[in-house]
Amino acid sequence: MTDQNDISAPSVDAIRARQRSRARIMAVLLGVFVVLVFAISIVKIQIAHHG
Image (cartoon, rainbow, N blue to C red; front, top):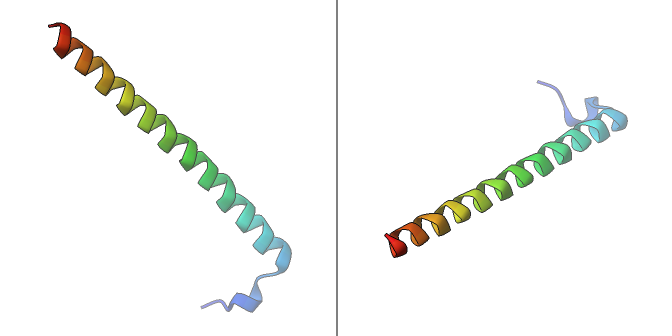
């Protein structure tokens, strides 16, 4: 097993940067999913109301 002290500071910074990048991508994808579900719900309600 590797010790936490075996990893140099620059590589830790690079790992953290990749994690932040992935977190931002996941946040954007989650936001798009929420908007999509909301839009589909609104359309279904309107169809049921007029149909």
